[in-house]
Length: 435
Image (cartoon, rainbow, N blue to C red; front, top):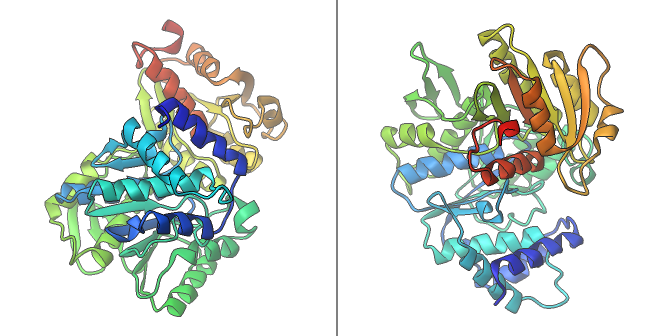
């Protein structure tokens, strides 16, 4: 059997097959494994933004209720093992090696499984081996032809629809919605986040065709803030007060409402939860790399926003930080992949930025700082290019006062690279230039 580093080399080498949308390869390998994904309950989470956060909330609440919970998300930030978790614990190196070998032994040489297909099969098998009660599964890309779309889920959550991955999903919001709606199953409840009317009509048509029930944010359920700073969930059947999601940003409150609507509509009878379970789960949920404060004095925030919709969410949060400290300057470190909307993304954030530091994660798909500089808006913002992401953070620290805010954004890969650098330092919360 391969060692863990050798196994990772094998898995990451599968990226050469690229993205292949289709279910036949994953269906075949899961059949050879004995259909592990059908031997425990599942919840399926799709959408453009907020999938991972919502999945983490679902897992945290169910775990607070005393259930053994698997969580499958992507991508990872630092270590591959982050993708596959049971009870908040990453899959072990030994299990990664053993299950990879099991899959390889059952794979024909003609199969050409992709990285994501093998990783998905690994997650499904690991959850069975670990005897989970229920697994929360995040869609990788799209929905209809995503490798995760082999489930018989108790319920489906679509967090929202925005432009992203148009090469694979289509160039309009309704086109993307139709691909995302591909995870809807017959008579399975569907929870839909806040979307436009044109997108909502796509899901209404899809659920009617599938004889599924649709619950829409703002219409069938919602969340409101109370005077005490907590939130009340106004649900499909019940109200739950005293909620305080442990994730920053108003959008996370909306994600929490969607997660609760899914639990209320899909798991109420089979996996009952108390109000205390729900309150505790939301209060203690963790989700790295999304509006995560990693340092203070100055504040350093990492956020994996990578499309204009995500940029708007980030804008709203950063703007609130200016209200708290009017003379605060915001320094943004930006690195993006080559298939993203670079100009539109930066245009959203530009009004708040004092200094923009353009950099790139060490990936072939990342655009260079000079390429980014060609598309960013022109104005009073100081623009600096720094090829190395860690040096970009060091430069930001040299510019920042203790009251300022540094934000690393544009790609989860950039966020992961920064977090990896910090974990390698003996004093990860100290300023980079002092390390």
